[in-house]
Image (tube, rainbow, N blue to C red; front, side, top):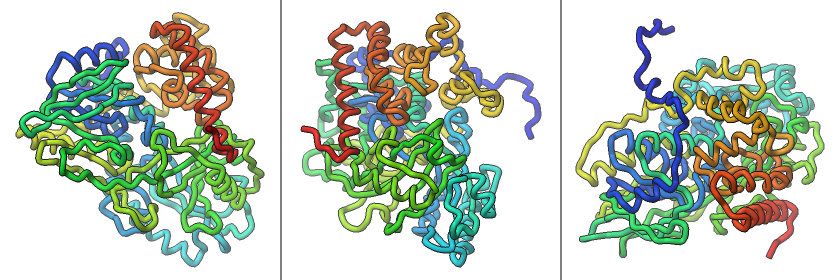
Length: 557
């Protein structure tokens, strides 16, 4: 318990602006051409955006470019979990678990409106389970290790459950051979919104940030990096910088920014997929871990709104990094696993959405990807190019801290990291219990925007029709689309339906029905022509058709 504060907190006051923080793409692109930066970051995923935030808070002049949209790669297609990684204890990697749990709690504090506690349930079965009662005591020792490594910071430790308590959490779980369960606690997050919020917070602290700007090459002068050459809106831009950070994740497989004769890190993309089904088909109140017949890897089922999503796979991937797809085989693997554990019938027609992404594993070929550690690598080349790759969502802040330390060494400047306690926009003054207690639209907006939700509700107050849902069956409003265009740098229909909202995952077909209306709103806000709107809508519809065809086992030309 803390004593009452006698004066307002300066940091909270600074992060409570009276007007929305605007991500202005045109302004950023103008700055790219006019200024000389201390560092330019290539890659707008969670790692790259956190590097930009860390550097901006240290007082560096920062630019960041992303070839598609913020979080459009791996950072919108994760398991949505902020966790230590229980299986890393099983692998003997306790240091990674310990540090991940510390970073988890930092995110819980610094992004409290986005990162919520998530209970994990492991059923104990006498036959064909993840483990039976004979192994349950050994597994519980892993949970004690997890709690002692940092799980205790959540304020609740793991516990044993009776069969009745397991069924209270997941009533459709098959009772045959059910001996009870074990529950422990981690956290979850909308990964795309977290990445976007980190980017906006970096911009708030002075970084010049833009999406849909592609880095084509690294510039060098006198044997040292001097910036990048980028493409934006059909024109070429030279971004001058004293250092360059490459944070492109799996895409490092296909792009070599290193100088001639210098080998880049060994990248091994691994594909992971999730499928979403209506919640009533699962009825879980927490994340349920289930055994998958014939596989050593377990799967999980997590509730998110009115859907439950099942995941994940972990397989080597050599295909197109810009469009990995959940295949028919992937889908049936997850559906069959769920039906083996639950009293439910699931068919392909129940799958309302899917995502497929790649993990940027730092490892040579050989062995199973699931056995590769999730450690990260930061490398500084002789010309000052800094590359960061690997790791996971939970440890992005720490990876960024180490990366900016490496930049400081290149620039021969040592500045203190400030992100350990730096809250993100929307988190200062946010009270989760008060915000979501009564439900409804205020709770929906609070969980997405935190204390900035007042700016979205202000749009609705000015125009009550803006409260109209944009996608049938989902709570997202037209006001959120307007806000995304004005203040979150949403440029395309896909930006809105795949990442500013998660409609594509939660209701693919309904999101397709909404594409025209989203395009019309973006047209009004961004000054798009009728042809540009129609092209964006057509592209989005083609994307979701390809996604659905892959699930059905149909190959599109």
